[in-house]
Image (cartoon, rainbow, N blue to C red):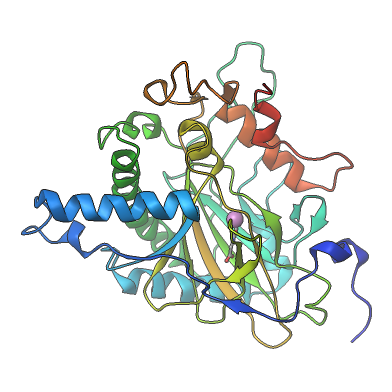
Length: 353
Ligand code: OGA
Ligand code: NI
C-alpha cells in the first residue's frame, strides 16, 4: 500500500474515531408547503415551517430538507458528468487547473487548516463566472479574477452545472426567506445582499483512501459564506459536530434530500442567534464518494455586520464589520497552499467585551 504523504495526516486529536454515531437527531424538514400553491398561503402552516427552520438553525446550524422542488434528474445528470470528468487522466483535468490568479477550476491539493484534504474538486461560479475584483476598496491592489474554466470533456458538464446551479439558487432564496422570517424579519430582508452574488458550486470527489483513520476528506471547518446547500451520494462520510455535547454525528444519506448548513455570515448577521456548525468529511478505503455543495454567498462589496434590527442596547453587536470580497479572497489564497499561520476566521472580528 505504501506510505501516504505526511501532508495528509491529521493531528491525533482530529483523527476520526472508528465508531460512528449516525443521524443523532439532525432535523429533517419537509418543504412541500413551498411548492404547493394551495397551502403556501396558509399562515399557520407557514408559521409552523418557519418555527422548524428557526429551531434547526438555533440548535444545530445544520438540517436536511426533502420535497425541496429541485428536479432529481438535474442532480443525477451532474453526478454522472462529474464522475466522467474525475475519471479522466490527471493531465487532462489539469488543463482546467486552478492557479494563484484564478481560484476556479480543478484542484487536488486543497488544505483545510493547513492539513491536506483527501479529495479533488472542480469549482465554478453559479452566475457564469463574471470577472470580479477582490473588493471595491480603492486601496486594494490585489484583483483576483474569478473565471469559470470548462473542460473539453465531458462536453455536457457545463450545461449540467449551469442548470443545476440555477435551480439550487432558487432553493437557496426560498430557504433564506424562511430563515429571515424565523429571525422576525421580513421574508426578503436579505435578498438585496445577493444581487451580484459570489455563490460558487464545488464538485467534490473523495477517492478511496488507504489510511482513513489518519486522514480526512475535508478537515473540520465551518463554511465561511451565508448558507450551504449540499447534495451527497449514498456513500456517507459527512460528520457534523453536535452543539449539545460536541459529538461528531454522521449525516445519513437520504435519497433526494439536501443538507443545509448555516454559514459564518448568518452567524454574524444574526449576531450569534444562529451559529455555523463545524463539520468534516471522513473517507473510507473501499468506495469513492461524490458530493456537491452550493455555497450561497453575497456580493463582493457586502460589508458583513450584525443586522441593525437585531441589535440594541441589551444585545449590542458582537462583531466588527468586514468586507466579504476581501475575506473570500484571503481564504481562497490560504486554501491554495499550506501556510504556517491560522487562516482567516470570523472570530478575528469578534468584539471582546
Ligand atoms: C465542503 C464540505 C462536505 C461534503 O466542501 O465545505 O463541507 O460532504 N463538504 O463533501
Ligand atoms: Ni463545508
